[in-house]
Image 1 (cartoon, protein in one colour):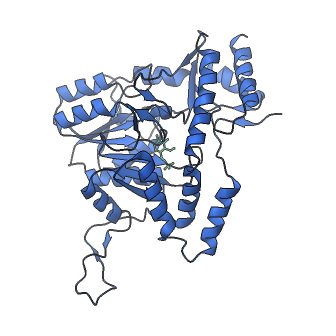
Image 2 (cartoon, protein in one colour):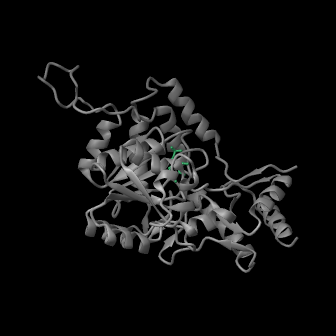
Image 3 (cartoon, protein in one colour):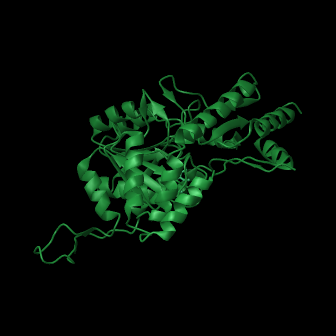
Length: 378
Ligand SMILES: Cc1ncc(COP(=O)(O)O)c(C=O)c1O
């Protein structure tokens, strides 16, 4: 029986060798692999700065902390996301308000954001946009809105490493104040656990670099003889990435183009197989960008039936996500009359992410397509 997951990491001998070499070196953390990974990542996405972190969640938390949420202000974000997007705001003492998705792109509906801001221009501190499934958010439009209402903008790019908007790679931070990536094993590249923050703002870079490591500032020497001195003027965190993780990330990043072209080839094949089938709905693309395809999402009428059927055939599809406003922990931030989330709820009712990972063989993909067609034609 086949065993085809919805996502799968890819570890090569080179990955193993690079991790082993760190284990044999003198530095397990705070060494040159972290610096090298940050430099290579920064060059890849073409941002001014990159800071590695222990997870995407940690990265989002540091990003929100650095940008700040004045007391009683709210942050706009989608309900169709992983818990970490909202948690980053809640850890920082802020309030959240959910925005419904556009039913075609599955990204936050920017018209709703504008309406909300028009109604209540002083209520908000910032926006976190999520590049759902790998489709880049329209950060150009969002930045214009943020400038108008004096809001900050974070791009949660956990799904979209390699995504492109108007020839710019996601993470080049031209439009968002901060972009955050995740290197969880289901993502494009993995460090086991880990993440990366990119920004073009030197002040944010310095601030986040300090708070990533307990806000221990070694530049504030009392005198040149006191090489041991450091100062802590705010409570920080240990959100550093180790050299073991960074060496894996570096090795993985060297294969990103191959990874992306495999994902895009698989996505094209799925799209061709299903685009004319009225029993299955696909995420639409944007005219001025490229999806990075962390996920390949579908919507069907009988989701539970398709999930169970595929499982019986050794195909392990997944639901992304149970919307946050439907989770007990976040339900109190949802107000159906003020801000209905109808498109999010409709999407959740039928969504299923089908296998998408760079080492998925064409033969296995044909098997998946065949079984989905078998199910849809029952
Ligand atoms: C949209 C989104 N944001 C944030 C995260 C958090 O990343 P991590 O798991 O690296 O903490 C994830 C991870 O699954 C995610 O999917």
